[in-house]
Amino acid sequence: MSGSGTANGSCLQGRPEIPVVVRERIEQLQEETFEFFGETLRLYGVEELLLCFNGGKDCTVLLDLLMRYLREVGIGSRNIPMLHIKSGDSFPEIDDFVEHCKHHYQVKMIEYEGSLKAALTHMQADMPRIKAVFVGSRNTDPYCQHLASMQPTDSDWPPMMRLNPILKWSYHDIWHYIHLHNVPYCSLYNRGYTSVGNRSNTSPNPHLKRHISPNCDSASSSVSVSASECVCVCGCSAYKPAWELEDPTLERAGRLSQK
Image (cartoon, rainbow, N blue to C red; front, side, top):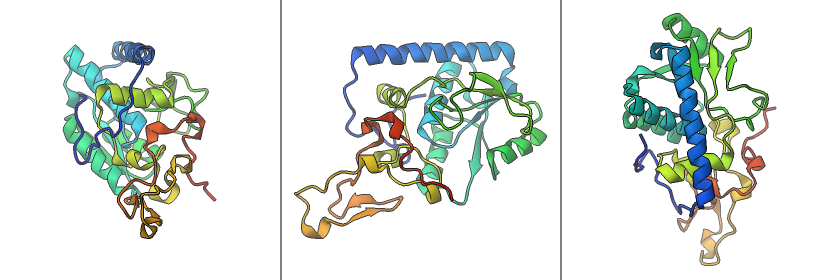
């Protein structure tokens, strides 16, 4: 269910013009993704499926695609629950957006704490009927370059099928889809975040930092780069929005290395 953004589901700012050839590519990717959903439902009952959702741009596009497909085939949005993993280190903007999506798409949300592996372990004990899980991975993500669109979890994980419908979507494909369908997204992406993890390991992408405007007075030359206030004192954004990143290989440049 695409639609206009709200206070928690951000509206697009400075939407770019999208060439016809790009629109056609997004339509083709959408068609292929819908075919994947159809194949999935031939292999699994709807009651055996789950969607992992962390509030990031990729799984937001996956959620929107899946809800649109379910509506087309007459399946209720609450039939496939949404798994969200709570963290004490998450961005408030992400938490608010996840809650927004729960209501916007009218999905049933299941929450656990801890790692994804731990959450799936607990979920499998609570919901043993779940056999396959949709994940918003792309093949440019770390450790995902060799993933198949349907791939069983590793032997030391809870046994289930990992479903990767948007595996071959690019960084810019994701943003083009959001633009074309006016999909709500987390407001952090308006402020230079391009890959969002937790507060302790994520900063705005340095390649999107703006030069301080000459119209700002000298008192405005300081820039706050906290999670909530990536703005000059004068109120203008200190970072360009995520979709203006020219080189997609720099998508994770705002992720801090783990020591």
